[in-house]
Image (tube, one colour):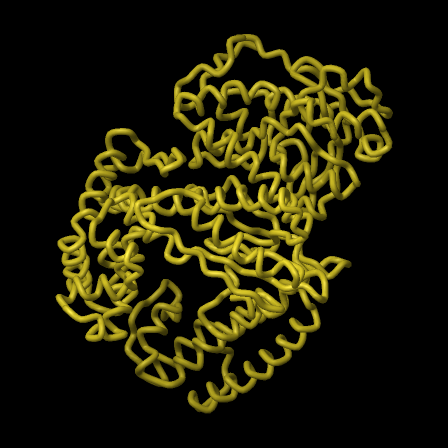
Length: 600
């Protein structure tokens, strides 16, 4: 097959012009002979959740020869087990973390995982989604690999093709793409000064995350059931109050019926309409909350119902026979470099309400006498902003351990004494501080603070007058993005921003705000990854029994025996605070408890 192998960024990724994909050869027994020149490994599955997904087949080989076998044959083969566990044999895979978790389920050990194509492709361009090996092939212009959907179908009709050769050859094409990809991807990373990011951050981190996922976290199902009963009772009470205030019973979960009650029967002001009637979205209801007690009840009802169904009931479906939940930390999804969590998502358990925080009380250490230790960075993104913007006022505040939001309020409102800063002023200053980090617009700030857009703009303008370093940083980083088409973190993680040249004002403005906040968010995420890798090394070297269980945004959660608590706490804080040297100090706060709620 003649094919010019050019990737999207224009760099040639392979010398050969003829693609000769081998056929997949099915074998019942794996011997040393088949493994002799094997460089690449893949476990095939239909499902994303590799903690429970069945393994359809195991494929291994190189770009010239591919063998396909069953997971049962792989497990029974001493030669395969030895090859898989040999760290001196370098292996190429797609998502090494998934393969390590799969392998662990079958009592297999994976070592020598050197090239993770999903991570390499992610680092080259985080905007390009890489869900399956086909996405890598497409990026390189290889059209001979079909999508999984084309081969297996989708939904309820998903199945292995009846023609076994089609299945085996599909896997052979995957191995071919994987075997060829690392060289080209590493070349691009090298040109972008990003190889260190792969070798020293993402690859070692994938091994740590695999162990965290395998370990899992213990969850008290009885506590969740008890909580669910309390929430159900409270929901019934709120329901009755809503009916009394409305003067009739109706379906609270029906936006149409709710709209008629609020805007027709009770004559509340209409803020927004949809195609089907009145909007009863959260932002609309929040604006109406002060006008009628029924609105506050509806907001509380919705919040509690969501908490009950998504977390109290939802989490229970993920508890395994050992009483643990094993989430998946997705390393190659966000464009900033932050980790995300799926099946279940443990990063978005609500913490703004007491009921939301209570959900965390069901998360426990796996041994009765152990504790949970939670350690999180204090205002890491604002500290990163202070460093990157080299802003004298921010640096001074952090160096002198002055409350940054009070400090901002004093400057923006022209106040001399911190005692004169009201809680309202501090709240507004906090919204602006984080608004800068998250690239908020004057409209976004006006919505957050419930103030007119004009006032929000004045607020931002005053802030930028006071914090000249931040203003210069924002202007410079946008100019840099226009010139380079990307922005970088301190660790050279890139985010490409082609929309920065858009003629559409809204699209371009969003890209400009993204240019401002991505280096900050991304650097903060990178710092936490550095801390995780250093902590993992220290825990091993010092023979701690304590284990890292979860990473939630800027927070790390460990389980630890009582006798190690003191040493672990000081070690974790020391490592986190010294993970990287900035012009401002990093600060980590830690707490200990019998469950996650107590440790926060």
